[in-house]
Length: 328
Image (cartoon, rainbow, N blue to C red; front, side, top):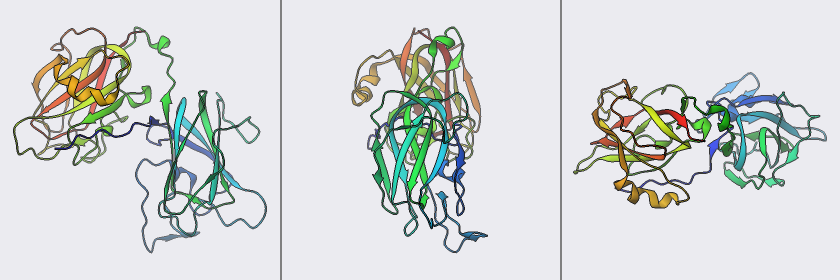
């Protein structure tokens, strides 16, 4: 069974599901700007047309017949420090945007073309039916980005990876979901995610179907499956919610949780170390398609930064919530 330990670029702050919004585009004649922020992968539907032409899964402007360029202003789900930007042109072949440049700003009100925008990329050459990942080397906190495309064309998806900027001092002594995506919680590694990715576990809201959770293959050997998660901030845990929504004939039959207080260790070292982490939640039964709240049986372990969630023997979990108080 292979270990899944995927690169972590940060939270997609341009996620529609997380709350990002496409505020304005000077043109979205062929395909609306809002599609560009969808979390799902873009699709191509042969033979599908609407009143303006071929239906495309992304943002697409009309063919420009004069000087200038097209642009779209996006409000990020939460302000943050940016690491990478992905410009996805999948399924755009003869109609992709040939080049792009990304600018950003921080604003507490809705920005406009008159706002002072800071370039955070050089002009980027794009190709059709491609995914372009660009490093961002700025330490400022940004709340909005402006995607400029030259001169026109289509972008299937825009993803803006970064670290949410949370003023944790305002959350001191308050119970929050320390694992929530919007505060920087993340999945680090798992031994298996055959049917559903570990990165679904801390998505906002309830799961939308069985594919919107973490699910391992059917185990045919001794042992159990597991996932390692990092909290958005060091904290003391009061409650844990394990939600098996939509998992009925394939839910995890039981779970346990181990925890650790870790500083400055590479993610790659954690799977082996996690075998010896202290126990927070003893092995506890789970039920199908149900939200389970664990509080009184949690052990006192002090402040922690990471969790290892064990499921027995295999199966699926939709969401994990870790309610506690940040230690400032």
